Length: 625
Image: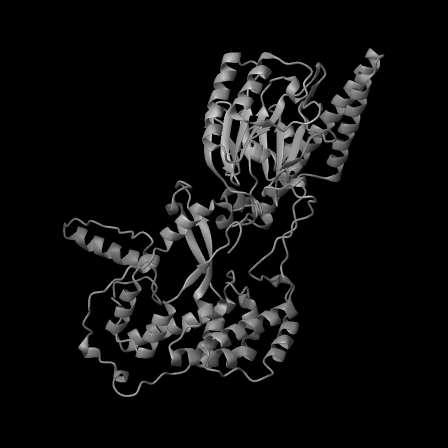
């Protein structure tokens, strides 16, 4: 795997920035260092210096590297991108030599702190030196060369192709430096000459290998998916039903091993899904921005052709001033036509998007305004630093400390009739299974580790009812919750307004298998029914997680209390408590004691106790699960 890097100077040109974004999309660029951008958007994938003279761009897409440790100053910005310290630099030619030396000193401090780890320093230094292919060496170039040698940085520039081309002349001022260990991982460094940038500067491209050796061949990368996923939109209901009939033709396994039967059920439904719908492959790579078209591509190619003709004329020994001026005007006209076409295409696309408001008021315009329209990106567990992910997981799921809950005396007025004599364990009924499937029919949630979508279970419910009901009934009888159903895939979500380095800036979502959630609902319904009929029931003042009650009822109760108190001339004080990470830090022993207090039948207490034991979450890090 390699990091695709692009370096550019946009001369503060809006259309040059548009073309840069198209080039990044076309080349699947994962990191760009941009000098003199037109503007720096206030987005997470752009990081600019204090004066917006240079910026780092790390597009959010599948497989994008992490970006953290951001530091910025005047004329420089740095961040750790995929484990490499990347420093973007721009120093205007109007700056004095003393100001240039101060800038290098500040950058040297950043680089020195990170050495001997991976370092890249890139940007427009406006410094000339024959060491990197320039025709002459100026004062800046001499100072920069000495600075790089002092820090032990290697120059990555190769050849004598100019990076800045103007009618007055050409020069090599866009430079790339790296520490020796990083330089050995760089390959394919080149000045791109065959692409129009609408800027005086040419693009620089190279790849940075993630390993210590440079690969001999770089083919298309395949994105392996450990959790199976299917394209539900292409599901064939008739084929799924037929496949389910074949799978359930033989008698169900009646062995006492609950875990083996749960594994076989998963394997059986996996075969049904494979027969009825294709698996999801890696998402197709986006090659164009939204306003790109074949006409604009042709205009860009025409610019390249006109520029080459003009440059060939300038290199002739016998130059014709009239011909040279004519070719220059032709090139300027081609650039103007390209800029105008880009502007018109963007305006047209914007108008079309606004017109969709009449057809779908909750579509793309609404999502853009609300900030909910985002590019497909890697999970946070893959893009964040592994050490930070471990700290987040340890904070969200703290290690359980032995806790003895206070003993609560049950209410003797509501004795449990089933507590005396032989215990009766009612099996799971088809009605309970059907009620769970009915709820599943109305939801479109992400699948768990098995990847089996809820729609597949809905369509196969009638055929698999006997097997699933039998397995769940045996689980209740043995007091065992299958080990496979105790595992969930963890997805981290970022909380806005909190430091990215803090574990408190993330909240988890655990994706469980649909069949496991179905069994959970059956157990939960039996608990609720027992407390409502036998008791002791939950407190009347509790509104959360109770059927027929909501936060609206709680608000109405608070309003009623306040109105009654105010009517009597009293003062009402409201105290709100927020327990941090309450769901994941509640001692499970307290839950078991609460079940005993509410005189829950022994078989339900056993299954809940087993449900709470040996649970695990899985997440994909950069290298492994």
